[in-house]
Length: 120
Image (tube, rainbow, N blue to C red; front, side, top):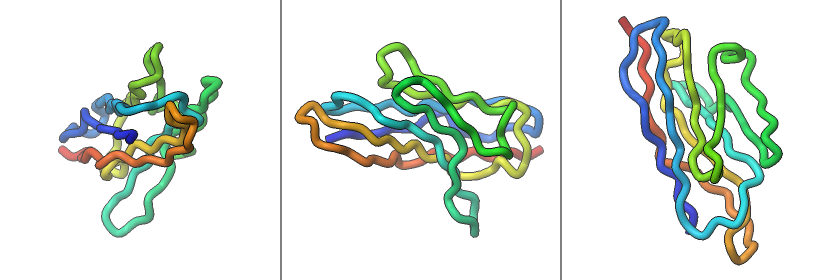
């Protein structure tokens, strides 16, 4: 079974930075896509950033130029570097992954989320 564990959330002042991590474990053969979503109170969950197997990335317009998604060489951990944070970035951030297990069965997995609060 595939598991995703996010970490790195917290309280930060406007203009500050945080880096979120998403660590994957389990019988993973490959990833198709790993993405970060966020959900603020009373709002729908929205895509923040995504990285696909070939390394291409895309971002929500609201975070372009401020957030960077990356992964480590073994592709087990995916990061979201967040700079110039704004109060409107406050949300629970979730990692989501699509891929195949070691038995070549597809998986579609969410992490439990990590809270990011941007406030003075």
